[in-house]
Every structure is written in structure tokens, then in C-alpha cells.
Image (cartoon, rainbow, N blue to C red):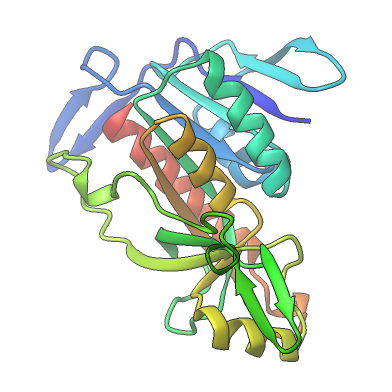
Length: 256
């Protein structure tokens, strides 16, 4: 299942340094926000007063459109994981054109220098499980001669010019997995092989689909937990979602 939310008539203002900018009338980008679950972007939808109404439902997808729109912005909720993300996004991009796609979501961090709740920009993402085992070694797709397993954004947040772009996010490398790590031995193994800073279940698939469709893309993640032996008491999904949604709101005010 994947969900599309379109905001159709929302108008916002941006206040900064005592000045107020009416954003509805400015030249804006057509932006697609891509997220795995509605829960990760729920506060953003609520804060912008978007009234969601179901327009169409079939066995493949549930599509939602809002009665209020921020100009030219849409939200695609793909479902969890790289397969759901690649399918939903690939299918959607066949019929819809965008100036920019932004993958938003929470992530686990291997890097203790990144704080729980911190929002970061992913600059490289690898399908860490795609390849072959050769006894104690791992053969990548490139080593097997089957193509790439590492994908990149086609632009950077800093390259999206706006006078008031002061996000100053840290950048990080990531891996995309089918099984999130929660075992000390497997954590050390992937850390030694790829030296990742973050892990998610969708990021590399998002980059792949956007690159194939020639859609400019960036990936933004908020850290909900450290990658360690599974211990939900150490997680703070609420803080990660809050900070991710704050970023999403500010980003669209600047660019959409």
C-alpha cells in the first residue's frame, strides 16, 4: 500500500528578521515529499491544517488528497522498506513530474557524535545486504559485475539557494537494510565493512528510483536511536519525529 497526500489550497507566510513573505504568490518548486509511514510526517500534516479525504482506493494503493494545499507540494507515503519504496515511487514518477523529491524519515545512528533527535542530510546510501557471501568475505554488486549498490543524491541542501536557508545540517553516509541491526556481532561486522553512520530501510531505494527517473533528490533523516543491541528504552522516536516535522515545515516554507 502507498498513499499520496496532495495539499491543494494552503497559503502560508514566512516571518524572519521582522519581515513577512507571502509564499503563495512566489515562484516555487514542485516538490514531492516521500515518507515510509504516515506517523513519521503526521504532525506536519496536522500543523498545516490539511484536511485529508479519501478519493480512491484499490488493491494496490490508497490515495489521499487534502482539501488545503501548499502550492505544488505533495506527500507520497510508500510503505516500509526498499521494495515498497521503489515500487510506489517508481510508479508515481512515471505520471508525475517534480523539481525536487525529498525523502524524509527516522533512522538509527552508528555514529555517537550524532545526537538522538538530530536531523541530518544523507549524502551516500548503500544497499548493504545486496551481494554474495564468499565464506567469510562479502562480494559487492560491483565485484560480482552486476552494477551498483551505492547511490547518491543528485543535489545538496546547500545548493538549493534561498537567502534564508540556514539549516546547516550535518551530512552523513548511510546503509539501507531489510533487517535493522540489533545484534552486537552483526553491527560490528557491517561497521567494519562499510563504516556507515546511519541506517534506514528505504533511503538507497529512494535515491535509485529518483536517479532512474531523472528527478533531483535529497534525503533527510532524524535519528531516533543508536544502532546497538536492541533496547527500545533508549529510543526517542517522538523527538526524532518532532524535529523531522519541524524541518519539513520550514523547508516547504522556503521552497514550495
